[in-house]
Image 1 (cartoon, rainbow, N blue to C red):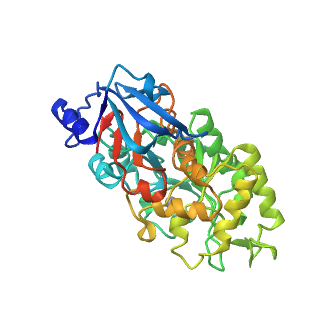
Image 2: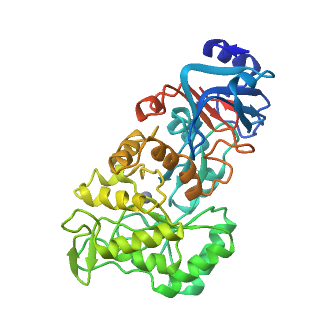
Image 3: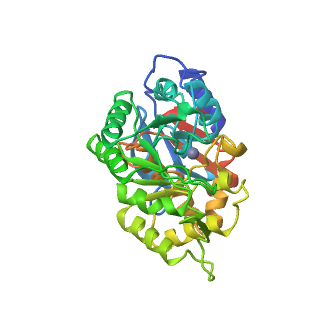
Length: 397
Ligand SMILES: [Zn+2]
């Protein structure tokens, strides 16, 4: 049974499956349906003429469309079905209602909060199924006394660590409060007198404690001088793309005369690719700064060429980056050399890995039914106005 979009939405409205607002008590969706078209799994090649089977908020499987007989099929001429987009790096996102209005209705079905005040944790963790964008949460960024983010952001964005014991204690405290990721920073700033940076023992203690609790560590690194100590400490993910280099009091270029990363940088990118350390470059925010230029794009291009994994995140709300579908970041990742499939993977499967969403970001049996349907191929233009947004099996639009 293939229904028109209007007939299908009318059917859903009659069953109450179109959730009108965010409620405190979640009601798991029960409907069984299929979304048919060219299916983009999030990682791997697209499957033309296939349908994604959904039941009770989960993906049951992917089958040829003509094999579906037991449920309504939603299809668009030349339409595509893909996982909900995940913005892996944003900040200060509060209530479930705000996440619904800022992100979910536009097709961003999950977000990664990459540091925000402790008091936001309960609101960020309140994610009634099918009603708002799921959030992965770090809580405040761990930093040394006087270190980033303290010189730039409000003190609530930081938890100061003065020793290895304090670092391990802070990780346990954040875990107890519901953090799903840990964020640290290796950032000297742009001033002649660098900001204090983590001592290696404290940074290693943070990463070790996080690993024992199953929490991966995301590390803020804008300056190349922070990258090697961050990798030495054992961070799992690099936030931003290092685009400048403080080297013993001097600023040196990160790109050589050939336009490629200097050998020291290339060596560290190789190390990241080999060790599976994904990068979330956040090009959207940096292209709005005086640092906009090849130093943002060429390291991403080189990292990709080495097989490095790149995730999508735009650092909303800094520098007037936009909420909603992060099409600007998608276009900038394309400018850094990612083809259409690679951009989609960055915006779905890899973003889910960085955020720790084990059951989101891909279309596969057992995954949460966070799905988009767009007209034609899933280009940034098409994603700007998805035909359907499904969250945990619930039609949001
Ligand atoms: Zn950020």
